[in-house]
Amino acid sequence: MNINITREDFERYCPSAVMPDDVVYNRISAYFDDGIRLAQRIVGPGVSDDVETLRLATRVAVLEAYNLAIPHLDLVLTENGFGVVSNQNVAPASRDRVLRLAQQVRDSRDDAVDDLIDALRGKEQWREHAIAIGAFASLVWNAKRQLPVMGVTDAHRTKMTELRPRIDAAEELLKQYMSEDLHLEMRMALLAGNLSADQTTLLHKALLFIGAYLDGNQKMAHWHMAQIIEFLERRLDTFETYKTSSAHQANTFTPYSNKKDDPCYFFG
Image (cartoon, rainbow, N blue to C red; front, side, top):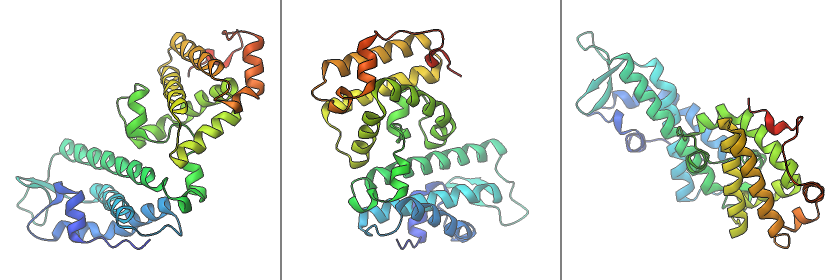
């Protein structure tokens, strides 16, 4: 994918850097290659350069470049936004203001990545790439949409990455009780963007369980897991993968309950 960042692109996605001259654009252009590499790594090879995909990829590239540049710029707050200090007579913006700007840009970059991945999963040629399989190695793939369901207020990919080890631990429990095959089936349906109504309901229940796990709420995690199992048992003909699994056999052999050595007790 060929991404060329114009000043118009830069100012569209970074309104805080809009200035009457091109000083800011020129200073940050040194980081454009790094931003473009991130976008191209997400898109991967062979994906058609349609207008919408190129727009979303350019947005990711611009915001990542701005994110990388901010720590290396002497910024000044003007009535129109932030500019680069170019002489000794202008006082730089306060550290707190710059940190807030940096956080805002990171959050915008994260949301842009979510939106790009969401658009790409509709493309068959993208779904064949390893980057796509990696993006959907978990049921939790979109921070902006899914973290609020889980009760996480900082709903951005940076936070999702921070929580990833604990999310993975919760999903290991899900695999134990819903089966690894159904977990994979759900992830592939997410990747293809064709979740059924029942799969959508199951995903919502799974996110609630993961949220309780992250919160360390043992009682609610147990309750949500029981709700997942009950839902699956009432829809065996819909979830054929679960119906033929050892997880179904285990769940019906003994009612689900916490045991002394049950990993559900350990919430990190």
